[in-house]
Image (cartoon, rainbow, N blue to C red; front, side, top):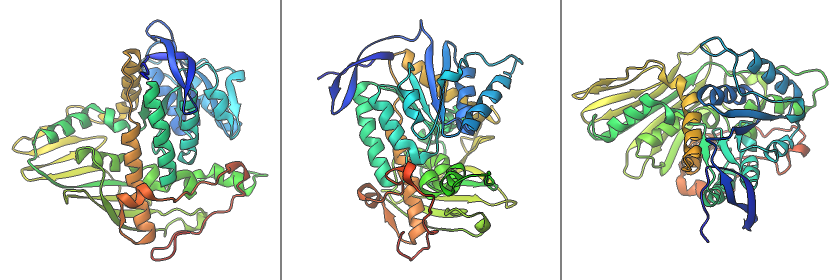
Length: 424
């Protein structure tokens, strides 16, 4: 059966393996593209600004979150936001009847009359939400990471295959792929500007992460849902939740391949008083099939010295990629002309995505972001266990961190992992 690709669709019919197949639609060049957002914290609210800043004929029409307070804050901030020319942001048309609250609120947004759904909740929810969006025939902006465990990756990839059959677009949140300076640097690496690539290092060493005080009347479950970043099954730990950006760049440097194994270490020594069960530092060595290696460092400790970016070491030069500076040294030296260009990548990714949909050639970044997410998970498990972990181990693993029904979770956390001890 041939399944056609359509730019933007609202009608569905027929069924393939329990999913609807897109059979009719219309181009979005003449009509507004309607967007719904699931998860309106910092990244969700940021994505609203980004898509409306970089595109015309786009409306954000529906919001979902587990807390009404988050929706209220998002609406206040978006309405107060001013563009560079000091004008109010156009295209935010959310009304109270299009705001949904609760763990199942994502369904109400996805089932509404939208063309694209932004999935920006904590990543522990991502596979379930993505699967539901694909079933509903929606194009998806899927924030990174796309899962927190190997079983979640398997579930995500199964839905991604159906999305591909349906001709749905899938944009990932690895926004540096849409930064023009990063793109140019990778192009120069591909052209041999540093010679043969020997090895690389990637860094995501930043300051302490946020932590929220308990509010009056909060249950243990609601307290940890509010502090989701510090819970293994909700965030995946910071090597998965944040360092994935730079791990993804590492895979990009290595010709968009994934490493065959990982060996690493990490620990938790700085925020032990806060509770939670994640680490605050990691170092992982990734080995690729041809023997080349990338070292990935991740840390969230203040006031330690920070470092963000990637260094590439070649036989005839080096390259450096970061938000503020991309350059190549050696015989073919080059300097990015646009300082801090990666900040515009948040806008570029949505511009590129909307353009692809309107041209009837939807971007599909699902497999790539799934590979980078699993690479980060592999590094985490190597550090947690103190063992060498292989790509085959991860692909075949039955490890799942997420409770089968989060609504019934009582807030109990797993013990903090200890290398050499049995994984809880």
